[in-house]
Length: 193
Image (cartoon, rainbow, N blue to C red; front, top):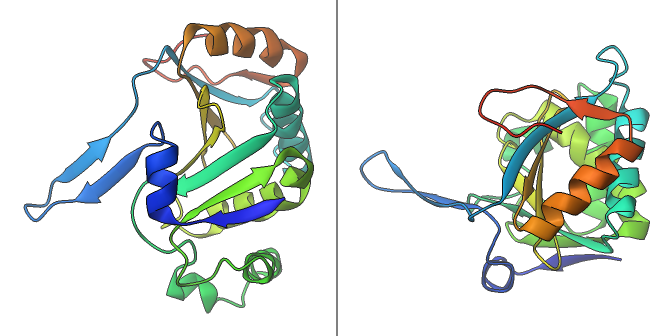
């Protein structure tokens, strides 16, 4: 199941998703939830950044964590697909991803959330990651499990930010990450796996 969610509904129901709003004085008003731990992970072999391996490992981690649905939302109130990205025809994987998003009703005017079931992640994630890599305005999308225990963020480089929002989620993550090919990215000021 892939279902679009109204932005306001998503913000009210999933209150632990990060939010940001530009203020008039060139500052941002933002919200980030309280969390237990903050990790950055990547594939064990840096040369193995091929999309299928990365996506398969991420889906395996989500499966191991018993997550049934993920909610995706941009922390800024802007459309998922920018006008300049929608007009691009120079990169076939991006064009295919744009066609996919259009087929599920996510176009230049959609600024809401999307709930994606575990069964649909293998279709959704490759397209999500392609846009993450190709559109510099697609940098602030987080996703969270329905119970709001773990927050995820995919960087265009293939690194993943994992934010555990409570002690049980932290314990589960540390146990399940060992069953994947992901390793610690060793970014500063983050917890170690």
